[in-house]
Length: 194
Length: 113
Image 1 (cartoon, chains in turn red, cyan):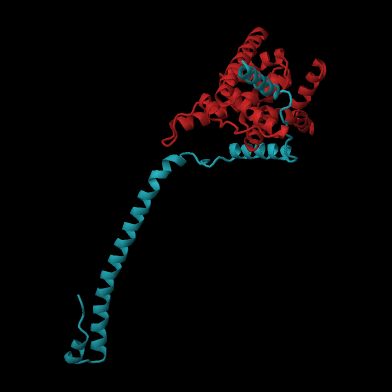
Image 2: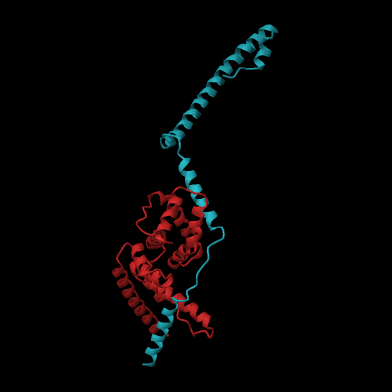
């Protein structure tokens, strides 16, 4: 959306024109849902969080000053809400009596090695996707966020910087370090399991 | 060396999975559900459960009030039983006098005290 167009759209949103909020939801719901899904890996949780994102958008619209793009603001809420849910769950696991402290690092190591690679390429891909997803989960939060938005969702570095409230150069550095870490983790995993 | 190459290849293939990750589509009732959440939150804010002022103060008072009401009820019941016994005695005496009942017959209905 062009800046002027977006400004008008936000004005219409704020003045509660009928159907404008629906337009906004329809425009962003799939991308918001996928962003949440990349962090949560569970469709039901992602749907729930994505709905909460739009509830928050609806309620906070009067405070939206237009400093950032509307889409950037929405994705920032999506990332924050997804990470909040993960943090809450991790905290619960950490303090649960019967749960041993569970670190994402450990998850990667827990992935059972495939006994033999299936001849079906799709199954192989699914397995690799699962391993990759767990390796991404085990990265530090900022690297994980930057890599998820950039590699899975194709968000530009500039927009990631706005979403994460940082600079483009630090996003570049986060992604570079993140990819290096990811390679190391995957290398260790395959060395142990191939 | 061969093993290392194989590992490298596998790492590359795994990283390439970024490019063909599955996308999911939202529920067709997504917007309806969002609006449902918004309305229910607005309703909750408009009519919160503790809408009466001092509702939280009333909570501990309620069981005490129930105990007091029970004690008063028991006291009233006991009092009415005592006065019932007195009335019964007076009525029996009047009845005995009215029908000139002998002491023997009268004693057949001893008054319990």
